[in-house]
Image (cartoon, rainbow, N blue to C red; front, side, top):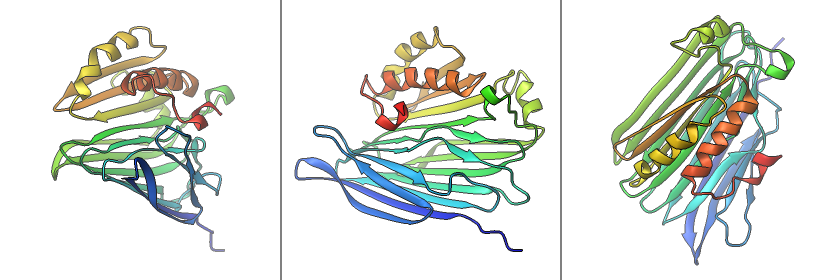
Length: 268
């Protein structure tokens, strides 16, 4: 019997025309869909939907977006993505983001929930210019704490590469394999955490938010740190569950986004 695999692709393009940002390209195929949400006086927001209901081994998603001509727009997801048990090959998610000069891009997907015996390979490639602004979050939840789920075994490979004007400015790969929950118990890795996130802000003024962010993290429910260098602001979060992680992440995003409301799907 041949297993049916999910395939999905979305390509988005944003440009500033006639006084506001508009989508000039919206391509979608397979299980991946995009819906535009735009309110008066707000930057547009593209909401991605995976109609397959989750990913398992051999499934593939391809996501790309470009911001040009001074565009300001956000891309998020309708709900948390779910990665289920894989028999052999991993689920693959590839994301490519291009941000031109004087554009403000936000990549704000909701959490990815990874279940026991799941396998995930996720790659994010970002290309920026000297005068562009970029904000992103990627969050992982290792089983649902309310259901007493744990990722006892499996594999996760999560890779980031960010270039500015062709020069690599940020590179990171998280690789957990085997007894994932046991690895997360180790102090040098997760110290018992069952959820984690990284928030990356790249902009000429990114470092100006560092002190406020660190002050806010003094009252964080989980463990949070932040650092800044070379027009980059990076925050790392660990939490005992997804709910705690989301609360701390929203606090951080509120500071970096200067109090601007999050996409409405985050409140659903």
